Image 1 (cartoon, rainbow, N blue to C red):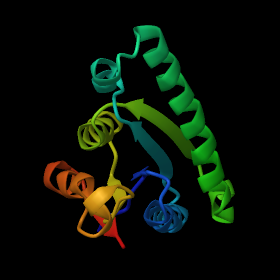
Image 2: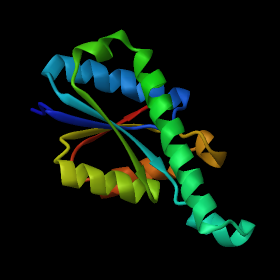
Image 3: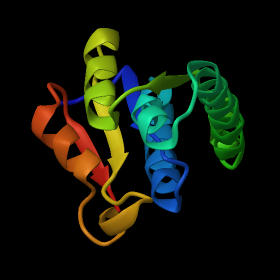
Image 4: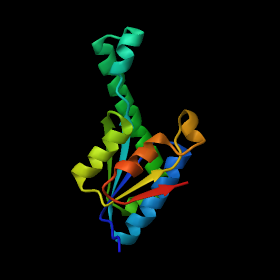
Length: 147
């Protein structure tokens, strides 16, 4: 029987991610598990050439994105009173979302990934998200896909 001690919840701050976080918090409270809330910022380097952005401007934009993401995670967690009773670590990484999530899960020895089946962007709003699909295919631990 699965008794998770470390639960990873990737978030894109959508309502779908809120549902995944709520589910993870309930499971975490039941088993006394540590919750990792992870937001992945896509690399901005690809925009440097397209929009002629300087390296300094790109670094400043990435730093601003990290600060904004930290505030969003704090606001998202605050929606759930049960989060105060659990050990929660927030993490912000830069990279390709699916690959970064899988690498983080492996490095941290995550027992369970709770991820929204739908995402915030493009067609992923209507079909199973490509990030969630890649997590399902690549994860070495159980994955709970939420609606």
